Image 1 (cartoon, rainbow, N blue to C red):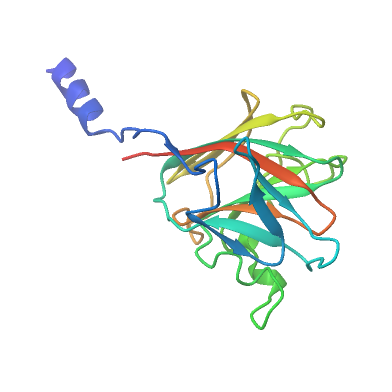
Image 2 (cartoon, helix red, strand yellow):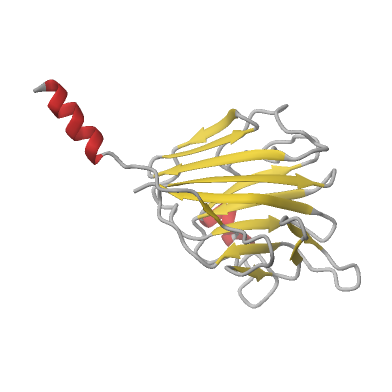
Length: 209
């Protein structure tokens, strides 16, 4: 009877789906640009976020998936950024950074990090929450894991009662999240300001059902 009960629990436990690539390697189909950054895809399939010096943008720029995801999924990606650059991954922000970019709705108190979650990516000396992997304003990641001059691999596990960030194979932060903040929604990639350059590749998601 005990073995049967265990089997029933396992049968009804949430199961991971298959990995889905979020980049097609050719263009930004399935994504939308928010703010004035220049987002493009290189011939080897990486997405690049940067600024046009002839038309620099103010504040932040974001690249959001048009698709939205539930509150349980795994996200895996690789990133590279110029020394001193700042970026992040947005989770659960259904406003799609509407309040973080210049415009009539601009509101610094309603950025993705404040109404949902932002996993910080930073290539400057670590200070406070400005550490790669930190869940901005909620949990600080351990330092010394990121390569500052090469590609890094980040995995983000999102569950109803957990956000876990793994960098280059090492768990660097965990936090349960806040009950008033959603985890379901689109996934966003940030270009923090016009001085930054950031690249992403092999972006995949696996929903947990």
